[in-house]
Image (cartoon, rainbow over all chains, first blue to last red; front, top):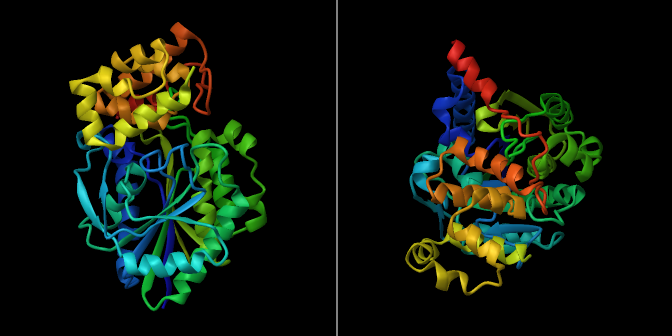
Length: 272
Length: 115
């Protein structure tokens, strides 16, 4: 049928792992906005959820690193992290291989995506699912953009990939939701964890909200590294989602830096 | 210096319970499969989080390894700072320390204490 929902959210492991250490007022408001996303996805009637993530070496390594990959498994599993550390217990997550195959086939008309029938989720997908599909009952199609192992996927390619995902969603009869997940500025898993460039984040989100393609594609990785840390490379997931929204503007319904979560926590939906 | 294989050990260990068990049961034979320097081998066995960080292991790979070892979050961050103090700046990769060793999470903690 079509893309029935598009949004973005943060996925930092601290969101679940270090929940008790955050300012409870801000944390609970963030969680409430993730709950709004869950309800929006449910109300959209989505029959499957595409999660455009930026995984952290759970499946892909520098021996064979795809610029893009789309899952085509019957089921997936996660988290790979110690469950007591992430505070998300191990789960099987249903896939939708036949729908995946049709989506991948359409994407491949314009973008050379890899595909994978096996996929282990790390916090990059498990944290969003913990809030968005807490019963793990909605079929998931995981998608990855290489934001970790240089050379990284160029931003304009992430955009074209998002456009291809939209064409694929519009070509299938099922109702499909899409969530991009990444950080904006952050310095994750380094001694600088907790550092957040709020001004940079707000500036990026302004461009994101108005779906300003040229402004988003004007970012340069060297400058992003300096201003927004290595975590800033994950704007690729936001950019692909904006492209999938096909010019629609976004409503950022939550943004707040939460240092113990190591990222400016964000929830947004596109006005499709 | 064989950072690729150093990270590959951790990549395979982080995602595979069987490799984790082998690490616990017979670390020598596990590490024997990879091209590693003695310094890297020692850091993996100890585990020396600070040295692994300075050698250039990607923070995401290292964070999962620290979680496997049940290292608390603050201790993980401090281990990396201590590694830089002891061994010097991060030698490779994009996860270098750029904040001068400051603790960027303490604002949150302080606020909660005031509350």
